[in-house]
Amino acid sequence: MSTRPTVLFVCVHNAGRSQIAAGFARALSGGAVTVLSGGSEPSAAINPVAVEAMRELGIDISEAVPQLLQTDDVRAADAVITMGCGDACPIFPGKRYEDWELEDPAGKDLDTVRRVRDDIKQRVERLLGELGVGA
Image 1 (cartoon, one colour):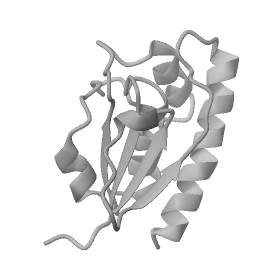
Image 2 (spheres, one colour):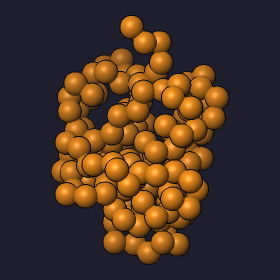
Image 3 (cartoon, helix red, strand yellow):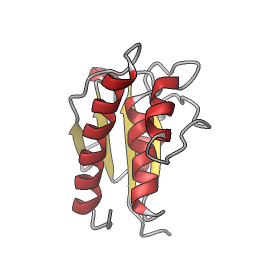
Image 4 (tube, helix red, strand yellow):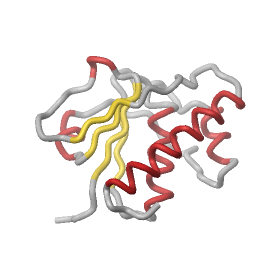
């Protein structure tokens, strides 16, 4: 069994915020965490402006596909990070939960998405540090 922590990032459409966070967690942890993401109402495709904003930092999330949040993913996660998910996210006792209040980048311009991206990056770096994973 893996000793790597598992982190689940959740937002409603799994097309912007949670995909950005997952991209940062994968890149900054160097594979030291298992990263999952999902949404309560997944979009058909990832937000292209989010892809562009991450590409500027050398992180490619273009192959990411929005996924329906799975209860088993919540069970498997050591930390569950929600972003505007509301009551749609299942809660299990004993899990670490954080709700990150972030602007939804859907339909926003690149400058706005950059601000959201940079906020998410700082939060992911802090989370990885708290999990004992060097960022």
